[in-house]
View 1 (cartoon, each protein chain N blue to C red):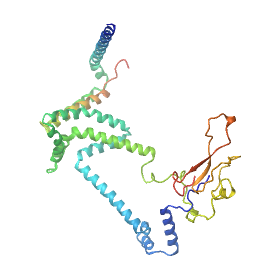
View 2 (cartoon, rainbow over the protein chains, first blue to last red):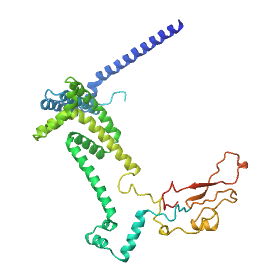
View 3 (tube, one colour):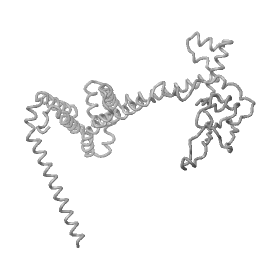
View 4 (cartoon, chains in turn blue, yellow):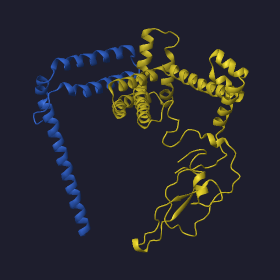
Length: 97
Length: 277
């Protein structure tokens, strides 16, 4: 009886900690999105714009060159990954740093 | 301490070289004359050496040709790997950075696999080969770019991973000094130049008891022997067996320790013939 009670309590604790972790993650993502315009403004916006333009043009070229092929969505995914990875350098650091 | 493992033993290459050198000094053979005339010093080393050398060169050439053909056939992979390697070399990146880039390129490959699997597994396995070969009949800039893009979701992660592996291997060989012409040559610390007296036949004198003046003279300068060697020391009958002053092998207290022990070591299997320690 006591074992089952312990298990229930542990399960409840684990659920609570998971919920707390998800909440923290949501807050973190929300903060990131909320602070993004300011970080772009204080960073290098022109360079970021050029990077976004290059990624878009390359994606259009890939879609034009290999239309209807399985490689097309893969190439667009690769370009998005490249943009996300490299655009971080053009943002200003977050205020807490 | 000088240890001569086998007095009469000498490496064939050394012996052959010495013989050839002597012969060339006395009566120049037609091979040595020809080698001097056409500037090929390896010509006077003998026919078997020359055949072995040619076979080695030929196999190396065949392997190189095979690699070149494979590199041309899989040219998108070669381009990606070569570019990644060149960038890593130029900017001094560590190999792990290339590996991380290969990892970041994996989502592209995953999407490609998901899109291809909608067509069936057979198409997925054959499409890269078919797409890679599609540009060969009409080689234009557009077909080359199209071919590269068709196989890029596979070749980019693979090429980056290959470049990371090759770059890691290159850095490792450079760090440890196990690459290049000098890598196979023994260090001057571990091996001395060939002993001119090693080519002489072994001395008919019976092996001397260690510690005696005869043994010391035959084996060169030896570290001072222990003050009172144990009477049960085994006398080496084989010239390759050398008596070395060894460490104390007991864990007893200092007062109960016996006199320094002599360790008998057979160095014939450890050190190569003609090597001095």
